[in-house]
Image 1 (cartoon, rainbow, N blue to C red):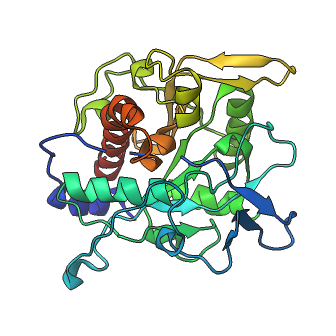
Image 2 (image 1 turned 180 degrees about the horizontal axis):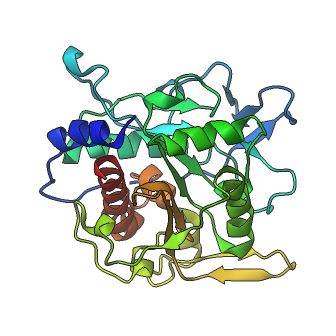
Length: 315
């Protein structure tokens, strides 16, 4: 997927939106079955997601307040942007507060997809996609999302696949992880893929923050907590951070938000991480709490998510 070809497709279809809008996380997922010898079935109540059988977000019932539906003209059935979510393992030695790949699924995927469809001229896949790195369809998706990457564990066979994907123009976005312990665990996995490169901090002057919405800084002003954190603090909009365990057995107030990226030699972003921030909850929980929606989803999570997507697909 050469960058020039990708730019042509996305620049040709992009328009800026006129007004902001919209929301969404769900941490109730558990898992049944362990190990790397076969697929894991993830469950919530009576629902089950078997990675061998489920290919799209649309196949799973909403676990928040429902998801929008839309269709595209037949001519655009393939010429669309797709929210592609990574199915991945969680390390047995990972920080215990780090979740699985399925957090916020399917609502965050479908809600963000709808808002991109609604707010821009982009045609967007109404179903989304979930897949492992070893899926042969991976090269069809220039952007892939991983949630709760503080527990990310790459299989040996996935490391060269991810490297090839990133070097050839793909972008990995990591979101919803908190605290130094989770960052170190995630960064160690990415070093296996790109050992010659380091993350760089993005400040609010970077054009990514101004690609569609003109977001104001500092970066920590864009921090979105999980809905339960917001409610647990009496819906105080001033408390935007979460408290997570640290590797030494204590706890950390994860106050500063960071947006960090790995660049290739031409300055293209290969990996982007929104750290100490839960955009996924901002996308997922659209109808659950009006104050959360107005404070975080509408003003932070959706604008930041759309800015990131537009910038990555055009640079």
